[in-house]
Image 1 (cartoon, rainbow, N blue to C red):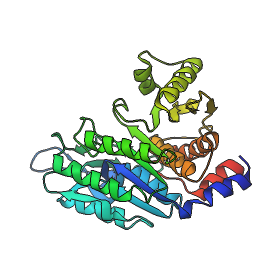
Image 2: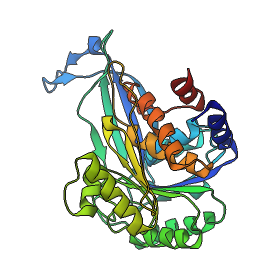
Image 3: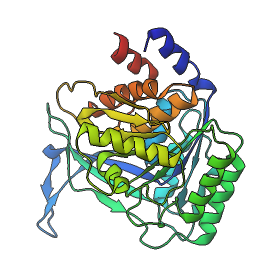
Length: 338
């Protein structure tokens, strides 16, 4: 990709209108100073003294954060928060971001706000040390009324967006935002607007999803192929077959080996990952790939161009320690051309 083509693609980002539908969580970081540790008089157990706390959108919110960092002009998060303190913090974190409009984000009294609480020990001169995470999730099926409201939000945005991300982050099927009725409505939207990029990602598997642009890893690709795919030849063949069968592009992330994409015509491309420099933290790398693929496709990039941008973003994010990072257009330009 030339610098001129990079500018042509990314120069369209401020005019884009994108929706992110999925499981937004509150990423809550507790910054702990080990020098202030003590022993509880009551229990005799160690006490970790928190000297700072940071809250930001996580899960599908990490994709949103990356789109904000890219300068996408208008962003609509579509998700669910509980009527609790964590929900208040999540909505505040969403609303304070540039270009984000949270009027399609709902609250539900019968759902808890999905939360990742992340204690971090900060040792002088060392990367942060993450202690055991505390998660708050919903372990019951999403009520039909909540799913119906999400479907209504998708219908309201159907003709207004240039692209959409669908992010299923929950461990238990149909306990989050991307329930069966939501998947069905997104599938209808894809049929109604066949040129609209709708990029889908799932923590568990994209099996059972309608024909969208699939982004997954090689292990998940093996579920579709019904056998493990490990070699480059196996991955390329399975990706081409899935894209052909699905009628949509697919992207397969391969960690340090980069990314593969395929079109329904069975054309396949590969882009390598950029070299690692020093300590890394892979949290959020996959979400940065999803965000950059979606923005680039919405801006008219080819699959190889979108992959190149996504690999640059992942390279930047994995070198941000103790946080779930993002990559800006300026940072991407520096990685690719300086």
